[in-house]
Length: 342
Image (cartoon, rainbow, N blue to C red; front, side, top):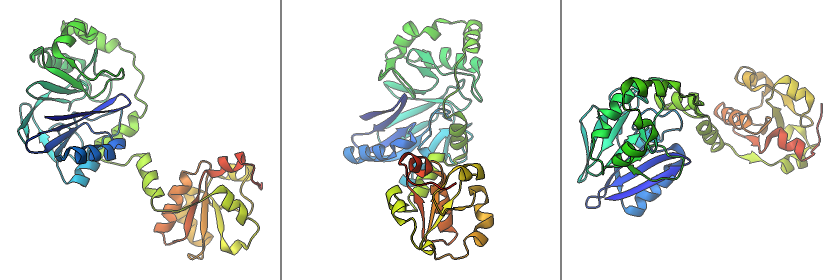
């Protein structure tokens, strides 16, 4: 077996391949690692047959949909997963065959309703149900401490004690554990009675994941992250440096329209000399009257250089093919002590 564990902060994903057939499966892939996964597949000569999410992640952005489309392979989740882009939905006890490898789905709800673990001959991928020295939390959408108790004590912990445990998260640099080690050393598993286990889980006072709303929104629906939208917009537009813009001030104003898309208060407080004000929220509605010449070069600027990138991409879609964005935004312009007009 070819096996790669890929850490992204505390998130863990796995590339598992069959040596004899070069077929592989990707488990819990993270969006920022797409190029890394493809590089590992090329390095080992592997062909991915399935991309699997063990559950709907609330703390990182899944790469499953993007990889499924890019590789032309099914996205696999549990039958109860809300994601509309899941192509193959597994039920408890069903199996994926990857070359000579067998991965059996075990429905292990509790952290989320759609949580499943993948059991192989010598190891189990537990998602966020069983962690090294801990368990998944149950206070996020569709979490249930009673279900988690059953998934652990009536499911995962009945696997052979030597079974290796590979979770979807670990923040202490530990690669894996075993079922036996977790039974003996995991503090949460010492609460073996349902009542005390549930009470312990309900008493946990945990901070919400940093990207909770965005992660759930994108992972449940297949929508785009803000970072994806910015990246896609940046790929469609060129940029102008602060120094280049400064060198062009005072020239023929018809050669370049500087479009400040911030709100009025920010614009009035200080803007690039000669800039035209058009708030981003009004861009599509006022663009025809504010920018009557679609052949002119337009430079968009905002506070940090992000919204202006989206605006420049929008202008290009609307037919202003010479729209560019200011690299760095007005914050960088002020810090560089370039001239301001108010």
